[in-house]
Amino acid sequence: MSDKQEDTKTGRSVHRWLYAGLGALALTLGGTYFYRTELMDRIMGTAEVTAEADEAAALMRSARETLLDTAARMRTDEAGLADLAIPTDAKGDFAPPLESEIPGGPYGESIRRGREIFLNPGSNAAEYVGNSMACANCHLDAGRRADAAPMWAAAVSYPAWRGKNEMINTMEDRIRGCFTYSMNAAASPAGTPPPSGDAIYKDLEAYFHWLATGAPNGVELPGAGYPVPEMPEAGYDRTRGAEVFEAKCAVCHGDDGQGQQDQTGRYVFPPLWGPDSYNWGAGMHRVNTAAGFIFANMPLGQPFSLTPQEAWDVAAYINSHERPADPRQPQQGLSVAEADEKYHNHPGYYGDEVDGEVIGAGVTGDPTLTPAATGTVIPQR
Image 1 (cartoon, rainbow, N blue to C red):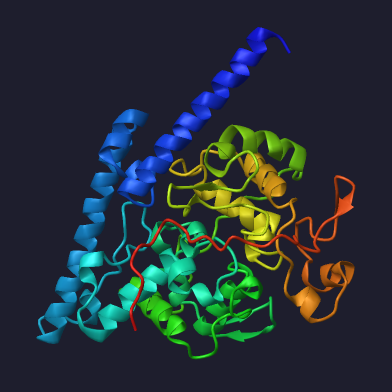
Image 2 (tube, rainbow, N blue to C red):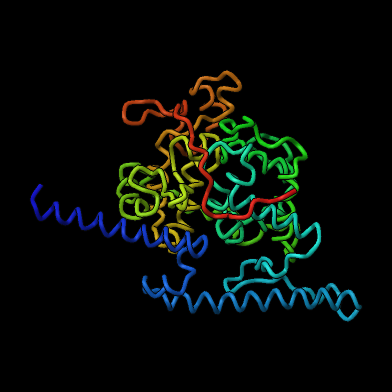
């Protein structure tokens, strides 16, 4: 390699880590998303975007105020059901309630506890978490963001039939599945998700129910789930995905995909594979699911900036690395091939040969169980 090439490579590395450092610092000091702060907007040259966001926020607040005013007038017979309007944001998606709308009393306390569990389960539900993920890593803006599987959409959709376990699932069942797979409960101190009826479920359900205040029940709302783009004609390719990851993702998640931690050791950006990430049973290990999430939400603060091809390819790259085992495989005494046939009939690499080795058995290293850097308040019950 020539001196010029080496200098160029070094310069790219320095710039990348400088941007990552700025992002991590702003996350630590100013909240979950670095693009929220006015200072960072000016540094990154996105002040115009911030102005648009402020205008959208004002419209959303107005919609929520109209809902609350109508509900108040209904209690005095000054308004009726016909006067109710679903609150929407500037894009036409459902506008969830503002933090100022959290009620007082025991119900409000439960909502706040549920929010903190959601933001930082590694601290607030530590006994049942076996990795360093947070619910808010995949359900952005504390479960509020449309096109990031928002919890206000989930709250009005359950009970529902799930093909994954071929039964009607309540919201508690659905949350238990998230602990089992996305939070890798098998590696947690308890070795299991929370038991049925645990206060963790009650608090999370209270938070989700509150987020859906004003949303119609049993209606498939715009912005629910992840908007998965159609698979490109070229399919998906992990080699192409590695190039996308290097250019678009490594600045936050690291060259090795293991995320970034702040000075206290808490994860600012989550690990994408390895023992601290979601396991082989989580929905995000499916290439199509990950492609939808990435397409609509990544890189952070730049939604819909990748092409469908890039989203599918980088999802393939991320999900072609080992991660904790699908707990159904060892629990049921299945081989990887048997588990693949029984549970993994979808786009993905489980049970496939990658770089000369069949993947899916799971990593053997111990997770660090390091909490996420998103929540701060530990709930008290």
